[in-house]
Amino acid sequence: VGSEMCIRDRNSTPTPVTTFRGLLALSPVAVFLALYLVVSLVKGDFYAMPVAVALAVGSAWGIVLLRGRSLSDRIGVFSRSAAHPDIIYMIWIFILAGAFASAAKSIGAIDATVALTLRAFPGEWIMPGLFVSACIISLSIGTSVGTVVAITPLAVEIARAAGDESTVAMFVAAVIGGAFFGDNLSFISDTTIASTRTQGCSMSDKFKANIWIVVPAAIITLCVYVVIGHEASGIPVPDAPNAWLTIPYLLILATAIAGVNVVVVLMLGILAALVTGVAAGTAGLTAICVAMGEGIDSMGNLIVVTLMAAGLVGVVKTLGGIDFLIDRLSRRVTGRRGAQASIALLAGSVDVCTANNTVAILTVGTISSTIARRFGVDPRKSASLLDTASCIAQCLIPYGAQTLMATSLAGLTPAAPWPYLYYPWALTLVTALSIIFLFPRRLRGSHPSAV
Image (cartoon, rainbow, N blue to C red):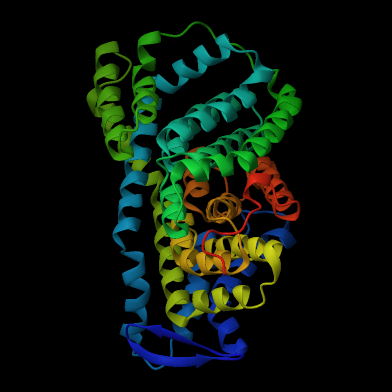
């Protein structure tokens, strides 16, 4: 083994991979990030480099690196990953979300809901309220995507009432941060299920360990939003709306909180928008259908980016980049603090490469459990670190599904909310402190299986 490791895929025999070849396997991700982030920062404009173009260049470079295969086989690697059932399922959500958002707007449902919200709460409390609402909904339904779909249209319209694009980005960031609160902590979140199963602890035990990290970060973030909330205090209060027009949006929120599948939630919302619009006389059936079509069309770029990102991940994984990353990050672990830091870095780094926090947890779960047993890390803490670190990375990357969905609904560039994503940075700080000072204290004991 030494400085090499063996990487396998279903189409090849074990091949020793040196550090150079491992870094080369990760280079498609580096090319993508360099094109998108570096060019945008140099230009001072995050619209300067479209995400789809950067992903296309990174993917093309990855296909070039897939040597020893025909061109059709190389493209097949990319295409199989892009056409994964989970990706197609996500695209269905995007299509339905676009249709509902436009349908609800065309009948006046979102405007009516915004008006009621602004009449009920002072402007300076709306942004903290959105963050808390996103936290509660995501905790209830266990999915960040579902939370983003449910709240973002409302947040965007409220922010636009202030007439400032930076306020829109700030409100969207508050929703994204709150969405990941529940994604990380909820009992029914797929990341919670994945992290507890791979680490061998119960969901309730992981919740008790995780709450000491997640709640302080949420409190810090809430305080920040309370302080800066005065920027929204100038939002004008509209006239009293037709309360019946809020039915589609309230139905979306109610069914989401009830834990109904997000696809069913969106279908019910669309049906409610059709019935309410026709019954209230604010829009005809044909006009609503036209609006739905426009909403679906607006998701086109998001769908392309999702397919390109999934294909890029498949190429990097086939090249051995993910396995190389895991090997290098887990090789020089020393001590309990080092073990915990390694587990967190593994989950976060793999999420950056895969843009999927559940996949990241499942990918590094076994090696993380081995590290935890070897260095006496409690499985409840290792599960908490896996879930938290992957959620931090997923929240910060501009090409994650949640950010892409939120910014697409808001008409923003994927990087626009980034300066206002206070929650993942607060979560990073508290996670680092939990590793340095080994808290919660009751989890300082050795792993039950440690030898």
